[in-house]
Image (cartoon, rainbow, N blue to C red; front, side, top):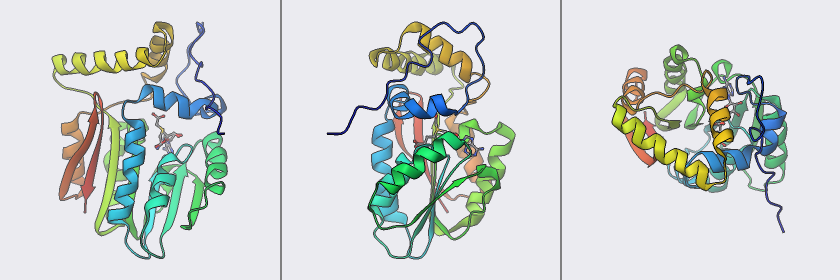
Length: 245
Ligand code: GEK
């Protein structure tokens, strides 16, 4: 029988000196519980990512999971690749995440080889790619560096390749922002987070996770060179887009 993942209680006690959120050992140790209870639709997105690998992976190409954390997206992609000669490259710059990711990959028996790389996604070569996944990662880059990365991804994709970009969204219209935030807050409360946990986590993420609007994402993807952009998932203020080269 598999054990329940350790519960996230990182922000349950009052913090006299709240510091900016970091992907350290404490976060890595509770990450599956944290992301599942904080991001509405996360489990569905992970499961559905496999279909992008099934439909878009090209023979003898590379598939990238950028900001892979513990490898949930990598495993979903790996299990549905249908063509020969693919290689998966999972990248994260948090050592605590990468160490655990390597264990998860080693425990999975799907045949496609996976290279888990501890590096900054801004410094990784992207080549011969048929599928690239940025599942809730772009939002952690400084805004002025996001277009550069998308341009590099576009350049490294094969014709017909796809980028799947999942992000927390911001809404330019105040009414929409309030509506979506209210429901995400309700989601977190329904998943057992206290008001203290919610407010301390929010403060810790304030300078670290900087969301864009859907319109900004669309415009940036077009600027990067993508010709077809399809929003394919949204749950409150979390969404995923597919951009085809
Ligand atoms: C999932 N995709 O489970 N270079 C490399 N990694 C980075 C960088 C960077 N510059 N910036 C942030 N990260 C995963 C979830 S979590 C999302 C992704 C979240 C990494 C960071 O270390 C963390 O592991 C991940 O991006 C973001 O599908 O926690 O909301």
